[in-house]
Amino acid sequence: MRVFIAVLVLIFSFQSWTKAEDIRDFQIEGMSVGDSLLKFLSKEEINNSRRNYFSNERNYYVVGLTANLKTYEVVDVYLKTGDPNYIIKTIGGMIVFDDLEACLSLKKEIIKDLDIIFSNLKKGEFVRSHEFDKSKKSKQYQTVYDFGNGDRRDNHIRVECDTWSKKIKEKEGFTEGLNLIAMTTEILDWIYSDYK
Image (cartoon, rainbow, N blue to C red; front, top):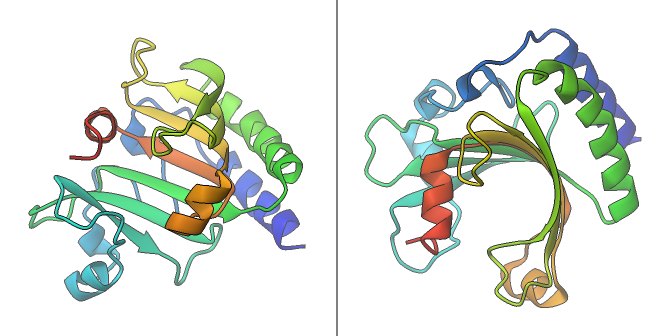
């Protein structure tokens, strides 16, 4: 039932949008790339929601939100370390799934609406290994709407179903599910630098 409600919320929220010309036009839970997270949370709430993905400080960090969300179970917001304005660099919403087929079914419904919103963008379909998993056993089933020239590091919106290897799930505690992400070149460069 929860998945059905999530599908309805996602579909109805897409219908009011016009064609997106810039990644900053796309919202997840009312937040967009380029917004200050301070519009939504206090500094204390941001610091208390910081994810501990790394044992040392990196150029960027992730804030995980779970409270007061309407559509997603989790929203991850990427911020630059030391930025006093807490500007959102990338944002993604997640709905947890244990079943890949159910995730892919929801992804297909979402793509129908994204095809309308992003009809002016280049679209790609990919099944790839997740960069975080060096064993290449964790997979991503992606549909990507590209704001650039097709380079994997261009700003883009993507909807994906992620499956994690047993080792990653046990070690990192990652959950599988559907992600809708507004990803920027800035954060992609960080990811490809091995999260330094």
